[in-house]
Image (cartoon, rainbow, N blue to C red; front, top):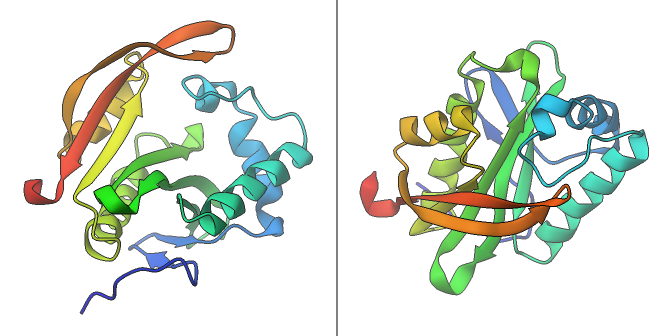
Length: 185
């Protein structure tokens, strides 16, 4: 039986290979490694992290969106190594519209191994079932072909293109908008 999620306690999710859990201060080195990799942040509105403080600030943002009930971000911990290899979660949660935006990132050394497919499926299931979302959106730089392939694999459909939607790293960027509906399952 699925229990309706409230923002009282941060939920932990388990997949075959990963534990999705709340961020702790001990994760700062792993997050620094993740976000200091220029290939990881290439399509993100972040400059590469330069210090552990950058990682701590990022985790403070995770706590803030949870407290505000506008999102939640899971650390992706590898069950074998016990290292955080990425993050996945929701932002822009709109309870009244039963909608949220999914986001994710992963160490480049873990790309192409089915990690995010496994993790995102668990996060989508949580969103549709426990959060009772009707629509999960994703906004992706059109040049991020790997992310777009993942979204298609997960059953997302492209809705359109937001032209010059954000100003990132000194330039305007387009964002392709994808969505998956509860009825698509």
